[in-house]
Length: 349
Image 1 (tube, one colour):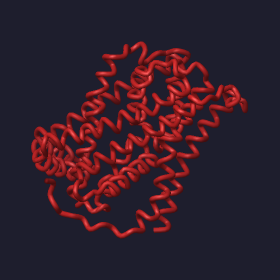
Image 2 (image 1 turned 180 degrees about the vertical axis):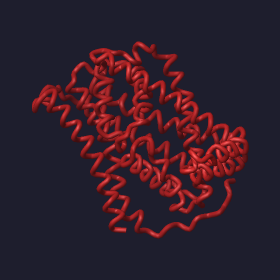
Image 3 (image 1 turned 180 degrees about the horizontal axis):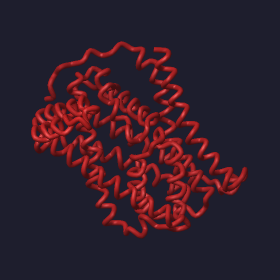
């Protein structure tokens, strides 16, 4: 166990070093040692930062509410908070493509949810998150013109072209993945399961056959259980998802209100969709390094001052990323040291 914890703590150090290293390099490269002196500090900045912290709590409340709703009565509010923080911690130390969902099944099972039900609930939360992007991204694109959402400003034209191309490629992938989840969980689970098993039975895909077969079986089980759920249950899960993601985006809006109040709130909010879609394919742990660069560059035309853009990027990552590294590191020893809750085989009501 000591070896395992040591390896995890080493993985915590990696994203911290990457993120802070990139931020320090940007400051030193652009402004030398006088970057902070160029910022006119005031009370509104502190209020904006405090408000951003409130929205961070709102993000965790939404996810905790969702875990509590989908796993009731096995998960109490306290256990739901613990699962949320451990999932956030996992997201912070793994590449964005992996994320916290990869170990959500393990965390739920450790809190007393049976393994089969934990897999079912994890697929449900995954479907909700993907549907959020599929539904709200077109709304944002309708409300905000493309020339503003992907404005070049002072940024190199090639950079913004790359942002636009990657955004549409990743979004298209999200749509396809969401459609597969919807068909597999809600519409035609048996047919999709048969297709997956047949496809991964081929020699070229046999390396991933076991995982694919498990996913196919979980889809069928998930569908049977979710069809028993009431409309009220679905609305609770949906609104909890919306509260979580909107709060996550409003963290940046609060920072802009404090640091750059003249910036358009709608545009700031809309660009968060683009940033988070891009971060879904980040190869670094939790998007370390890449997040800071994208934020400072992509929002540069709204901030006006490069020094301010970097300071806001650092503040954003501090309260929406590094805080979960700290929280997870504090919870981790006691979490793995405590006795595992006995899983309940109770079916979903």
